[in-house]
Amino acid sequence: DAGITQSPRHKVTETGTPVTLRCHQTENHRYMYWYRQDPGHGLRLIHYSYGVKDTDKGEVSDGYSVSRSKTEDFLLTLESATSSQTSVYFCAISPGQNPYEQYFGPGTRLTVT
Amino acid sequence: GENVEQHPSTLSVQEGDSAVIKCTYSDSASNYFPWYKQELGKGPQLIIDIRSNVGEKKDQRIAVTLNKTAKHFSLHITETQPEDSAVYFCAASPNQAGTALIFGKGTTLSVSS
Image (cartoon, rainbow over all chains, first blue to last red; front, side, top):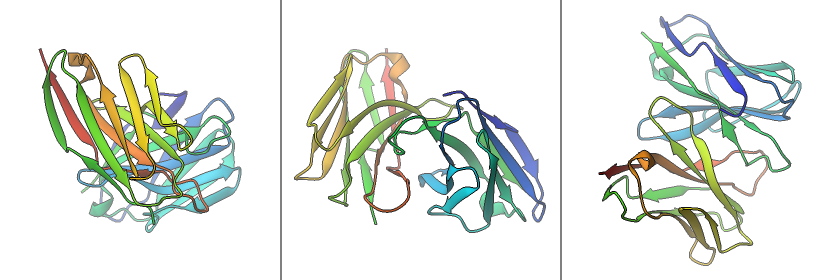
């Protein structure tokens, strides 16, 4: 999984609670991404980062925030989880000059009840 | 914005047969087209990619072809094996600010022995 770890790997939480997912990489890659994967929708970009403290929104960013205070960690936060955020969340990195060449982590399955 | 359509959604072949998955894209300025393989419970794995200045690329039993005029690209798997069974995703990189890959909705390939 491209030297990426995601934690937790599984989480069940209740509607309205805050949730933070962590992506950790060990190779000092500049670009990091958060995607969600849902049946019928494929993979959709939530947020991405192009450096420490440099982040931007993706296609489905509403209800999510991110932070990157150090190169190796990219955090995804659901401030107040909703059932529509039940999904599998994948972190990805780009190791080289092409930011589109992306490698994915193992994923986090989040269930919001 | 960019839109990627992928066909078929499911594909069943006999071991040893060839499999072809096709994708079309809408943004003529897109210039990078990766293919991912996703096994159950795992993250997508980059298996092959092609840039817009190349018409075909091969890696052992897999190949990708690109027709820029028609705006479509295809994944070809020859001599399929049961371990090729997985969900395959195509993607395209839009030529706009940001680093979002746009993914197709996936093809479930089943190889029976």
